[in-house]
Image (cartoon, rainbow, N blue to C red; front, side):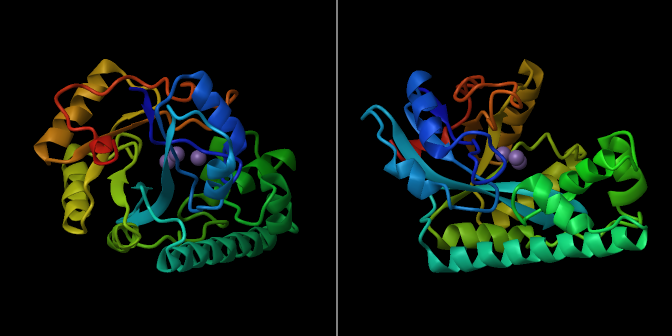
Amino acid sequence: MIVDLHCHSQFSDGQLSPSILIERAQLQGINLLALTDHDTVAGLVALHAAPRPSSLSIINGIELSTSWKKYIIHVLGLNIDPFNSALNLFIERQNQNRIQRGQQIGIQLGQCGIKDAYNKACMIAGHERVGRPHFAQLLIQEGYVADMKTAFKRYLSRGCPGYAPSVWADLTETVLQIRQANGLAVIAHPLKYKLTRAKLFELIIQFKVAGGVGIEVISGAMTMTQIAAVAAICQRFDLYASSGSDFHGDTVSRVALGRQATLPSTVKPIWEHWI
Ligand code: MN
Ligand code: MN
Ligand code: MN
């Protein structure tokens, strides 16, 4: 059984359309695929509309950004109802907040003499839901800084002139939104946040109190040591284990669709719910 419960399409920051993703999944022999675009369910209609073999099942997913303490944590909602009205209102609110934040960054960069930054960042992104990486690209393009790292260090990080605070809903509300849309909440790529062990445990405990049930034991490229560490945490907190490539496209992803490592046998796969 080949499973991939985390990937992106052009509806967020992926390179492929949902129907090409389906073709790709078929090519890779995937049996269960979840599309988990960032903060949108817009790609799911096209995903279902694409022809697919009976050996391939689809799970409706989303990857939601949340605020937890000073961190931005990604939570997957798996098997959500994409037509749930409260979930759609929540997504819309998050997107409006993101637009406002982008505009605020634009105003502040304007005060540094960088003209029309928001509109230019929108051009770079191809849509109006711009994030800091788009502003960083702009700063590089216009010659203000040499690279991404410097763009953040001089302009975009907390305490810098182009910094505006993040706008995401908190962890608890996000998990509740997933649950009320009949989804299962899963902490995405737990090692990416570079939390201390104690902080990660604190995050998991709060996540579980809110009703979260899963953690990504496998996410993209990981070492055997990393997999063993997350599997142990998954067991310790009695969570379901998820697995995904976090595929964004051939030129940006190290792991192809469905080609992430297999789940250790010590953990309970979250897809037991759906097969
Ligand atoms: Mn992404
Ligand atoms: Mn993520
Ligand atoms: Mn992702």
